[in-house]
Image 1 (cartoon, rainbow, N blue to C red):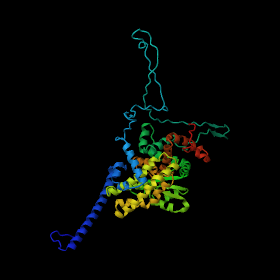
Image 2: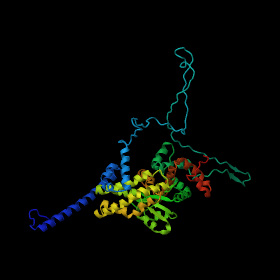
Image 3: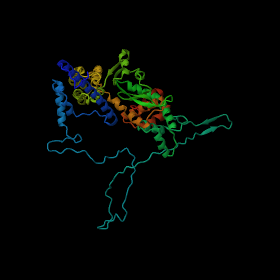
Image 4: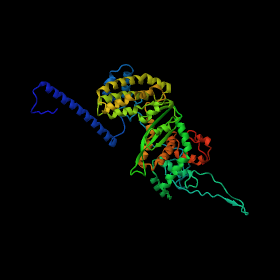
Length: 518
């Protein structure tokens, strides 16, 4: 209804309708403005801001009036949280005092001792005969000890050529000719030995140094190794390790809980004028982390990988998993991630500060329970979740049901509420078993190496390159989990796997690995 301020009607009912219509339009415009403002805020944060979802707990509970009115365990949790906050020092970097009148203990600022495992070279310095003469009585001074100091030096890497001379013997009759055998090499008739293959693999897939940079580094060492040659080496290395990769995959999936996530990776396609998007999937088991590559994000990738798995699968709400959960024969139980739900409320703060902050306060209490139960055993952790987390979950659902009626379904806060309530059963499942985690941040952390690496190597050369990366990155991640030097592990395994019995491959897995004779 258009309003002409110079020609207003005299009918009071019509004026009332005009005012109501104007107020409704203003309210709708305000909500649209908040949605647009929220979208702009997320774009600016994605481009320039921090990725952390950090809020001051005191500010969090300032808006959470709903929690202050709670009874029982939820209110007790709030009191404990506030007491913990009061006990924290103002500066989180300063440790608390040890007692009344005591000065706080300061962290040491001295030089840390160098590891005993480093190669050491001893250099001794002696006084000359003239310097050993006492300036007071001219007698010769005796040695009473020494002062030892350490200096750290760098020994640059180097390449060496191994000449393998195989003796040949023949009979004068010309009927026999025999050549001495040599140990099997990782790549038959190839230039690279096990240590060089391990160096190239670790540099790219653990240290994120692309092959084009390694090409320059090797040139400085006096060797011309093209990136195309090294790319072929990595493909052959992945093929050589493929049987061991399958054993590593079986080890990762032979656990009660598997966390999974995925991230995009650009892939060259000769049929397109630009790169297309492939996917790297991570599967985190109890003792191993395994990666997989798929050209697309279709569900057939995880469906094929998880074909033999039975147990709890913790992931985000990606629709490709839904069909796997619905098939009773597969035996997969869905466990959702509270970190994903929390992120949606965190991103909707600028649209509805009071409602989203209250939801964040409830979720903060859930994480408070997890911090307290972190070092407990399975049964004690389950008991604590039943005692404290379940009442919080009950109140949180009641709050979200009330808020869903108030907000617009397509608003940021409406979509956050819809996401949480739609996945409610899977989100609460962690409270039913002490072995389950509240989120799948372990899987997200395992993808950090991929996200850092793709900023350096930028894209895969083909789908085959993606599969090679998935295989070799699996070995790097598993070495990292068990704190094994990946170069030492790969050098040893690549030198042994060619002649190793197939039925004893488990001996070469990270958890069972014992270095062989170099």
